[in-house]
Image (tube, rainbow over all chains, first blue to last red; front, side):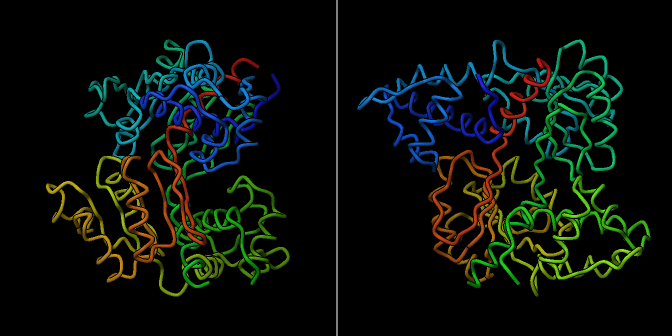
Length: 210
Length: 210
């Protein structure tokens, strides 16, 4: 299958969540325009995403089988066994992210947490053991972890990212307010809460004044 | 000045943060290529952003005055008095966001928090008083709040967003895992942690397998 874009993957993830809600409600069939309404998109885009990235065609008038489509999207997103994930930084934000994600994501296995604070090491957060930062190289390799969530201060983010990439991490979800220099091929998703808020404030003012 | 895009505003916010770091280090001048390196961008883009959106031209060989540029970007981003902001949902994630933002953002004034849990109402979080959800219309109007951060479950997000928009909010930063239906002109910044993680996991696997 052709390479799938960043934005398409985000939409597939959203469709899967919406399908999961429909499954819970006992709905068995869904048409593209219904999914499009739920996803704030267009029916044509839903059909294109599902045909090109997932290989699923809806049937005229009936649309898609909800359970089947849920599984098919999962096969694309999660691969055969899902991804092992580490969290670095068990502060307020890291703990909140852990609590938010724990147990919810079928394709994501939270395997390890790391913190530089000795008081946090050895504890378990949402079932996730917390190791010292010095154990990053060993634990990442031993547990075949390819995805890491960085919830640490800006000053230490690049050095920690280097350690993680050295140990085999190829995907970083970065909450640290700094632009990481990633190696070629390594995927970085920046979630910069302060920038998002400044952007929202700017456009809120534009909207109010227009 | 022409309308500034979403992405440009995000870059201006990043430049301002980088300038703030330079100011702390005592640096007085900065050239476009240095800012570009720090921002993971190109010098041409830095110069274009600063000329078109901020109206600042660097001087040959000297570049920009750090303090002046910091102020000029602030005038664009923050407007005359900054924006008043409310947080809805004082759970793990809401508290983490509050702790992360409190006192840090010059143009953003955290004025009020809201929660449906009576145990949280009446308390103060990072200096921010917590009101019951029922007080949303009154407090938003009284305090001229135009920006709201939604850190609540998906099920209640749309109804709360409607109340906020009714009361005059024109910018929503939405952490709830749901696509909000916003009114025309209202800006919505979605921060969907689960989708971001699934995306990171997908591309981490692609990178490891390529």
